[in-house]
View 1: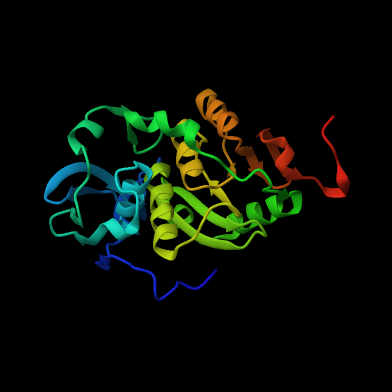
View 2: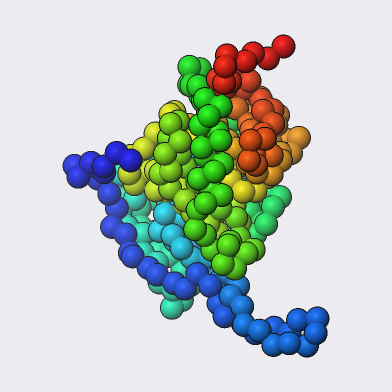
Length: 282
């Protein structure tokens, strides 16, 4: 991954840490007692300039990046330079964001909220859908079939909270050569994608030559967020929804669903995928 430019402005960030799993005991069907680990889940209430904005239910692995990515993907803050600091305090389950000039028309822009599908139940502010048609993805972006397989295998071998405790979703950002750049897990896939968006922002990474992978469904929220990050390829081991498919077609994004082993289903953006041995769609 490209090294972070030391001359770029970065907001002041806390380095909050929290346990990602919790130990519990359980009885199995034979009455035997066992100990197991389950994923942590905790509220994180976001305050922007002392105004309560939203409470996110999160695993807590990357709270600063999650907060930044949420503000970015909701189009509430347009530039990283507009943010002075992001300070997470787990003793009160809150994060305080200080901006330079506040959020313009924040009351109006956050008045209408859409609750989205999926684990951990995400939400988007209503005006977000109005911006879909303004998104332009790179027309010349291409992805080799062999890279799809490389990405799927990398995820299969990745050490994760899911393998230890289950009940979480994972999202990852790859280069178009199949190099893993970020891997983040959370109780909801929408949180994981926001956290990756926040890290991309901090590292100054664009999405035009990147591939996004999620273990969850490719819903409209996931597609919109991926498009806002400028990423032309979304992969999932699961499927898509009708609205996710519709939005992907509108923005010209390639959706690859049911990605397991050597199998995948290319649903949209067929012209972007370069098949092995010069295979062509008929």
